[in-house]
Image 1 (cartoon, one colour):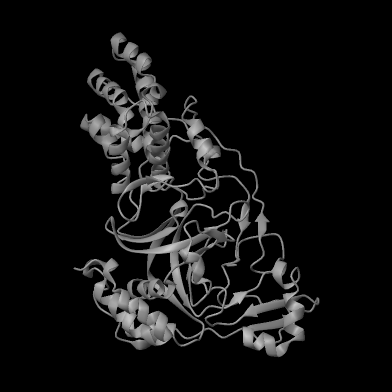
Image 2 (cartoon, helix red, strand yellow):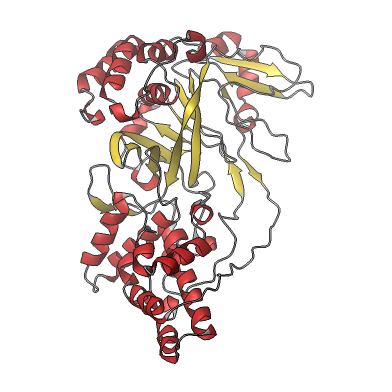
Length: 491
């Protein structure tokens, strides 16, 4: 099977030169070059189960704010009544985080000695042997089997498992990290400890906890090969190895992943990059892109965009649209006035829409999504941090058609027809895909080379600092407790 990255330059050039007329050709090329292992086995036979009906456009003159506007981001729970698209903060109730308690099980001398050897060699994973009290464990082993050995070995093993499975970095040092790791639910510490003791294979069980992604293995090899004198490089690799542990151990067979500092999006199939897309990410500050692990629920072709009040009112767009109907029509804007006098502006589908011609829905409380953009020139920049948080995606229509083919069992010709129809159409996924918005400052690039990326948001420092401090006890906290900022603004 040809690599999906070999879409010819001629196809892409045709799309630019001939506009939407090239999309059927592109869609057929996309379908032909997708690995057969991930294509639907059979296409649905009933057309009505395949082709979604276009969602009605917003009414021209509602008497109240639009309750649900096609193309707008999923609404997040919020006490405010701000219009969709407004950058706003959601306050969450403060929940007391409890310290994690490790189970205590019976340890034989042989199993305890195997644990001690495993701890002493754990530096290869970028962890610190001293964190797991090897001297105290050695003394307990010398004293023989009993309650003291059981308690100490269980605690040391539990700490080791927690760090390998969930990451060593305390949650408070994971800035804007909202990607909840499911591993502690899928592989609870008690289950792992019981397995290690019943099989008498502590090192084998521990070895299986490492992230399965080959990028982690590449970092581990680089860490091992980097001389101890290169302190800063080793620390950076160590921090980014830990970031892999913040994610699910296995990311899935098919997923989308963007590494924010690299400004690239990947479509990955069975740990191989099938296609890559340049991205534009959030500007540093309040509009920085948060780190998420979400799910593709649908693809919207020809989306609309509800303009935030910061632009409608703050920049005078509402008055301009109302007072200049000809200009508004040419620019694709429709304005309505609510019962309270508030003006709402919706940008209609079209190539000048701020969301471009495609949006990927991935419901989350931050209102972050992947989308097209009419401002293609930014993809030519080396540093691409210009958005209000959402991920602008190069060749987004191609990506949308790929998701429709894979996730909705849609024939390529039909995906192309919908994409060039000019009508708002949402294609719901029948097969969902994970989307990971990650932040690696030392990682394999899309070319396969390990390299450092600029820390554009300054998120390295607390992670690096945490490795210079004693290990902190784990709590039940699963993600950052920072404020949630809705960033539904593609500009």
